[in-house]
Every structure is written in C-alpha cells, then in structure tokens.
Length: 190
Ligand SMILES: [Zn+2]
Image (cartoon, rainbow, N blue to C red; front, side):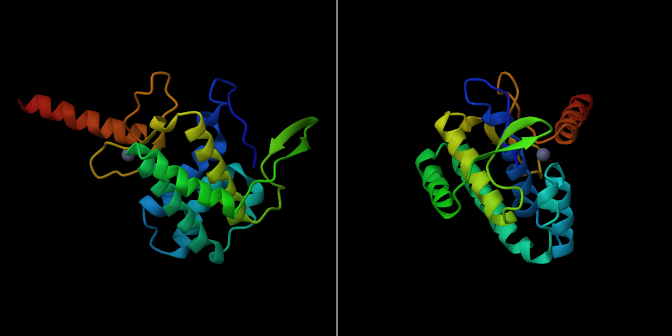
C-alpha cells in the first residue's frame, strides 16, 4: 500500500489513498453494521479493491479485528470533529505504538515508490499502521477540520473534505442530492 498524494503544504495527507481507505473501512464496518461476516467481507472487498495484496488476505477471521479498527478510526474522527485534539492524539499514539510502519522503497514499473509495508504484510497490522500514520500526519499538519460527518438526516458517514475551500458537508453526492431535493420540495410547499 502506497501513501502517495499531491505534494502540497500538508504533505498531501488529505489526498492520501490510505486515509480515504481507512475512513471507508470505518464507514462500512463501524458506522454501518453489516448483517453477517459474509456481508462485512463483501464491504472489505469493495473498499480494499485499490490494494490487491490486501484482497488476497480477506477471510472470516479478519472481520472482527478489521471491525475493531473501523471503530477506532470512527472514535478518532469523532474526537477530531469535536476539536478534542489531545484525546485524539492519545488514541493515535496508542495505535502507532502497537503497529509501527516499516517504510521502504520498492521498484514498480521502473519507478521507485515509497510503501509503508512489504506487500505481504499481515492485513490488520498493515491497515492499523496506515490508519495511525495518516491520522498522525493530519494532526501534525493541523488539517483535522477536514474530517467531517455527513449532515444528511439518517446518515452518519465520515468523509475527508478535499475541496479547495473546505466547505464539504455530505459524504456523497447521493446524500447531497437527497438533502437538496428535500429542501426544494419544502420551498414548493410554501
Ligand atoms: Zn451521507
């Protein structure tokens, strides 16, 4: 899993594929509650499609620890959204201590790329380390206000606001359109 992103003042942390993936894991397994292990594995297959080595490690025994990881990411995001940076930093430090990253370069298509782990690293340890690192970088870059929770009624999904002005309010265009359509109907009724 690479940690590449756009090269700007915050080191590209908001564009980091790892950040978007761990937030998607939290949404799929902790914000939502899959009905069965099979459903949870289906969600993980969808979210981890960007990292083929992770897909090869998906089996029923990873559902519980990946769900726990999703819950921890959800907890860290809740603290960041509430501006409780000190408490969030404690959780992130605990995660960093459990599964430290092992950065190394590997040659891909004639180009050296920075990876957090060897491609065959155990799934849960690798994604826990990635989660810890991306949230450490967000706090370091003071970009925690770019983590948000969808404002659409009935949706609790987390999102990463990569918009230029930081004005995002919804997890998806589906939620945005739903709220817009409801507001439109409200106006028509007046
Ligand atoms: Zn939403």
